[in-house]
Image (cartoon, rainbow, N blue to C red):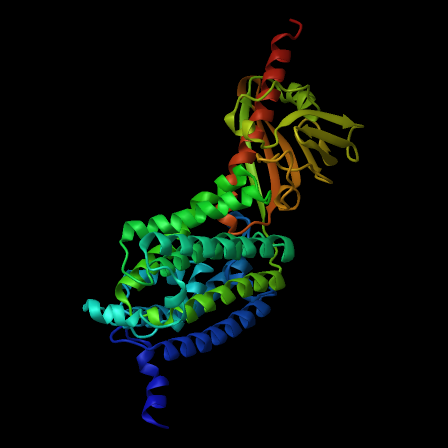
Length: 474
């Protein structure tokens, strides 16, 4: 074995954060160790009776910690024990790779960000060993050759506009691919595309000359805003959902833009910018396609909201099974097109009856599964209307996420007696959200469902307390 091969396979070299590591060793060891870890994780999962795929590293599989059984807790503990040595090796190799390309070592935190760490790993696997450019003549020499040098405008405004425009066109195409071809509102759409926008727009902007950090972030932000405007103009998406996605997209674009700024400022990568740009263009749709092949099952979330009603639960029961029309909503949330409840109707009584909860966009059809008067009413959701009416420049748009991505599965009302003739009324909705990352979109969906619950429960409370106050005196 020659010296270079011996250096590549030196075991003790994997445990120290000192020194540097080249891209070939970083990529080779990374893929090799991931293959070992994934195999061990699959073996552990099978031994506990669970399915385990590549996408399991990104998606949630439990509703909450209260639902974790002892066997699953043991399984998760085994996964943590398996992961610890791989985490250590991954961190120390990433630190050494960052040092080799002259990037700040704090960027190692991206190693722990789901999905984004794949792009980060690919990026570090292609970047050459970097040297800080201190001689302007050397910098000019390194950018004077190559295809991109002849294509890209050299003026600051021209390079910014070109970078924003090219990345916007590609991002819109990737969005159409993800939603209408791959049927995915996933990690690639909400994590990969914003990061791609920030990184590549700034790489193009800073190709011919070093740009300031502030202007680099402005270019990355402009690319996100232009993509949003394009999606509205082509009737692909409405304003409200874009506003919901904006915080995540802007943060990720800034992360990508910051890395692009550091690369054009610190590293001698301009000679390979065309290869880097092309590789990222190919990597993003491939990762999005991988999501589609994996077809990860989204978890079921539960949202519980409660009010105290100054009436006995027999009175409350009468008003929750079916209730009269609610007044027009005053909440600003429901002025944006989010569906809101109007009234509830029921055909029949007991198990097998069908309740219709009429919303502003249509009716939820809810077959009754548990009728335990006056304690518990539980129902499934057989069908539901669109979750909102999108604000748009056009009369009507129908993006897929309005009907098939936020899906109610089950609901219930639980009535608990309290002292002094009062009742604790608790409403629960179990729902599935197929948009990733799940925890981010859960912030929005939980908030919206809580507001819907509050509207219904407050109405039931008002009706029940009014009926109780008007009861005949003994």
